Image (cartoon, rainbow, N blue to C red):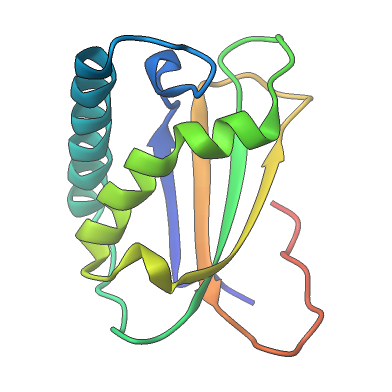
Length: 131
């Protein structure tokens, strides 16, 4: 199935890691910058406006900037502000992302996140296509 949205977002900043333990003001500014940056990238790439009150399946593929090992759950947490910016650009509420699948690419380096959005198919056991 072809995704409704297929976009590449920048690697989430280290400041957004739940393990960073930084002052709240530093984290606040980092969240605001990353959210705005992801919103601008989505608007720049002319993402389509999605339907309100429809559920979607979100597939994230993290392509790290280096060969270090990254914790997938931590990366998803770091993406929260970016996904909020993407949802703003799509004119939807981020609660419409009913299902989220995330993977970390172990064989490539790049420093970005591939984001694909599909219609949410309730009741079906259909995993995400290979990225």
